[in-house]
Structures are given as C-alpha cells and as structure tokens.
Amino acid sequence: MKTSSWMPRVAMAVLAAGLLAPAARGETITIGIGTQNTTTNTVTGGVVLKEMGLLEKHLPKTGKYKDVRYSLSWQNATSGPPITNGMMADNIQIGMMGDYPLMVNGATGQATGNETQLVAIIAYNAFGGGNGIVVHKDSPYFDLTDLKGKNVSVPFGSAAHGMMLAALQKRGLPNDFWSLVSQSPEIGTTNLQEKRIDAHGDFVPFAELLPFRGFARKIFDGAETRTPTFHGVVARKDFAAKYPEIITAYIEALMEANDWVRKNPKQAAEKIEEWTKISKEVVYIFLGPGGVHTLDPTIKPQWVDAIGADYAVLKKLNMIKDLDIKAWVNDSFVRQAYKNLGLDYEKQRAFVAGYDGDKPDASGQIWINGGDILTFGSPLQTIAGAKTYLQQGKKLDAVYLIDHELGIKVFADAAFYSVRGDNPKQREITPFLLKKDAEAFASKNGGRLATYTELIGPIDVTK
Image 1 (tube, rainbow, N blue to C red):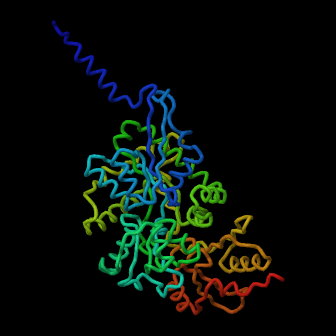
Image 2 (cartoon, one colour; image 1 turned 180 degrees about the vertical axis):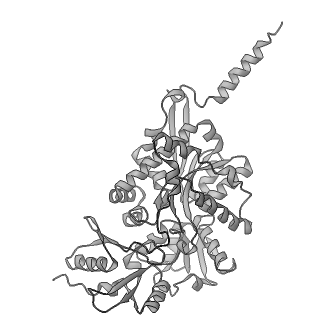
Image 3 (cartoon, one colour; image 1 turned 120 degrees about the horizontal axis):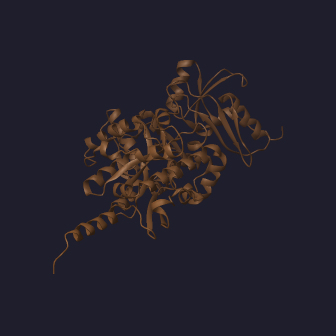
C-alpha cells in the first residue's frame, strides 16, 4: 500500500499543535502553590490569596483558557527547603521563600533539569531588617560577639541562616565561632523558652514574635549587615513557558493583595492573625505603615546584585551548586502584569522605600486594645501618650517606635533608650533596638540609658 507523502506532515503538524497549545478545552490545570503562611513576608503571595479568592479572580478564563478548569493545591510549609523539594518533584509549580532558599532553589533546579525562575518579589527590606537572633529575656548576652562558643540554632538553609553566615564573614569571624545546629522555628522556640540553647536565629516574624510573647530578647538584627533581604516568588520554568498567562495572573493577584494590605493595614493585620495565628501586632510591625518590610513585586537591580553577593557567601562555604543568575531571574511576567494593569513598571522598579541613610522618621504609634492605632510626632509624645492611656485604665496592644540607628520599627517595651534631660515633658528620648547602640548614643550625647518601664514609671489608674 502506497503511503501519501503529506500524511507524516499532517501528523507532525497536529502533534506540534498539541504540544504548543498552552491549554485545551475541557482541560484541568492543576497549580501547586507552595506557601509559608507563618512567614509574614509571604502572606500576600499565599494565605491572603487563598482566603480572599484572589487567584481565582485573576486566572485567565478567555481565549485559549476558555472552558479550562483550575485545580489549586495550596501546600503550606514553615520554610523554603520543603517547597523546593515539591518543585523539584513537580508537585509545586509556584513557590515563595526568602533570599538564600531562593538561590538554592534556582541552583538545584538548574542542576537537576527542573529549572525554576525568579519571577517576582513579595516584600523586602533594603538593609536586611527582619532576620534576627534572639536570646532568652534573662540571658546575660546582648550582642552577637557574646555568643562565642555558645549553642545557637537556626533553620539551616533559611534566610536567617544566610544572614548569620554573612554576619560572621563581615565581622571576620570563623564559621566555628559558635556551635550552630539546625532547628525549625517551632523547635528553636521551645528550646529557647526552656533555656536549652543560648540563642536562636530565625527569619520573619520570629525574631519579633518571640520577644512579643514575653520570653525572648533580640540582640542582633539583619539590618546590621546592611545587605538587602527579601522574599520572592519562583515558578517552574516549564510550567511558566506553557502557561505564561497563569504566572502573570498570579502576580496580578499578588499586587491586589499588596494593595489591600496597604489600604487596610489594621484590618489586614487582624485577618492575617486569624488565618495564620501570628499576632496582629507582629504582622503590623512588618507590613503596616513604616513597617520593617515593603510590599513590592518588582525585581530591582539592587536585589539582583544582592543575590550575587549572597551567592558568593554560600559558594565560598561550598553550600550551593552552580547558579546562572542571569538565566534564573526573569521579570517578564511581572512586567506584563504591570502592563495589563496600566502601571509603570520602570518607575516602581527604580523606587526603593524605607530608611535610606537619612535620620529615620521620629514618629511613634500606639495600638489601643479594641480601638484605633494612633500616631504621635515623637518618641517623647508616644511615651507620654502610652502613660496617659495606661493611667486611664486602657490596655495597649502595642506601642511602636523607630530605631534611631537601624531605621526599623520596634516594639517600645523591647527597646533601649538614650535619655537626656530630667524634665519628663521636655527630655530628649532616643529609641534603639540594641542596648549597645543606646549606650553608645547616650555616652556621645550626654544622656543616660533607660528602659521602657523606667520611662513609663509608676501608673496610678485612680488619677
């Protein structure tokens, strides 16, 4: 039987059409999304989308996606490595994690043929704020250098682990400076509370959450490294190539979640507490006005530069496979999202919010239990306001100030202060997260060291 010469060409065309078509009518597209619900920096890329149905709202439903059904698989983890494992197994197509885990994710994907790409940022601090090291509140240690030879834990492979490695390198300290072991946030928290370890390093929000819970004290903040830190979104390269509109839709949903948080910071903090069990006051210190982290999906040149510097830290320690950063970073999807929404990507990409080296904002805030969040013009006014409300018998959920040295928002009751002047109504109050910074400033400016309790003084609710 003679075979027509056109038949192979037709078969090949049909096959090619089947391979190239991103979606077929009646097809079910399963999207595995690896989230970190208790990592406050990632909530607008995960739990907020899930609880508010924002991803479903933005997923494409016309053209080649007409009649397509979506199956969303939300997979929560407490850190980045399990999400990377899921992406390598193709159970997760979109994941979110901190800067150091992101790099490991990219390098692992390139090494195994399961390539991923960095497609957007969720939140950042331009100087490293958010990661930190805490000790028990009764600990005699107040600085990183006090931890020489001590038992310290951190989730290995996390952004906090990377921050600690970078801190040692910047100070010229050896990697065996302390006895470092890997512990998850949950295990590290328990061991610190029970004084089984001397210190615990962790990522957002634990270095703030544990002091807020009353049993820990922060002695090192990532802002001391002056190195940008961020959490970002990675997508499997094959999935993104087949369904680019889905990745763009995800970023559009992320941007709507960001807008919701910015426009409704108090409500957002309360809802995120409901969804994640992270205290609303801690959520607010990160994502509220003037918070430690800025919500912004653009991939800025500074972040790409920071990736290169962070990669060098891990490479020097032989802790990461080769990573082609240029091939891994892909901002085409977030650019498309901005275009779809009629926004200027280049303008936002060039803008970096947060403390930029000038004197930090001196304002403070008080969150009254069951009431509003009030803003005050200075630390002195904030402390005076807190005392007045306490004398009125009101409960304060939180009092916030800005660290004069690091430029990050801090809980007033966890801060140290340089105080100059004896008149309570006219004295100069300068807040710091770290005791050493307060002591140095007080010594230089003729002040004295004080705590929040000392500044508030005795409270007489009968007045």
